[in-house]
Image (cartoon, rainbow, N blue to C red; front, side, top):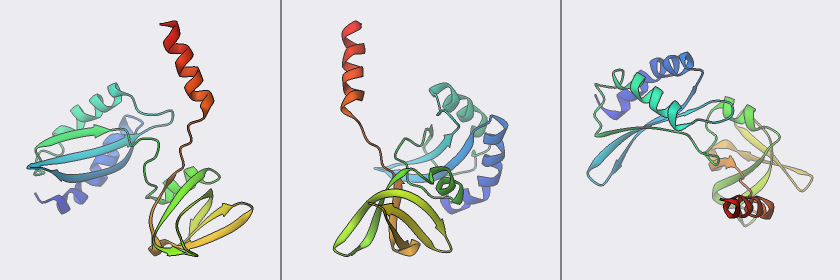
Length: 163
């Protein structure tokens, strides 16, 4: 089964994820060196654990048997995963995002702001009190903006010192 045929399995993979209260975020085949990785990204409120990945891996293995891959990986999508679906955009409305463009607009290819939404082929963010709109076709990636604060590092250092 070719990688493009993986798309035919997505509805069944989504249904399986739902049985475990997970959300199927993405499934892709990636060639790295001589190997082909089938990577499946799942999520749930509060985040995915290693045990969740193992449970889904065992359950989905038989379903994807016919797909041509060398290694199957079931992963958390990560904090900064690109927003792809309407549901992603709805979930992150009101949150800080980074928008990367294919070509500069006003001399800039990367914008940061608060996601206002994505509708009718237009992505809108609020930057410094001003709404900025981009044609979706001009956006190479939109992802949550992850900020690590000094307080996060101080807390981790304090926890490390206690051990």
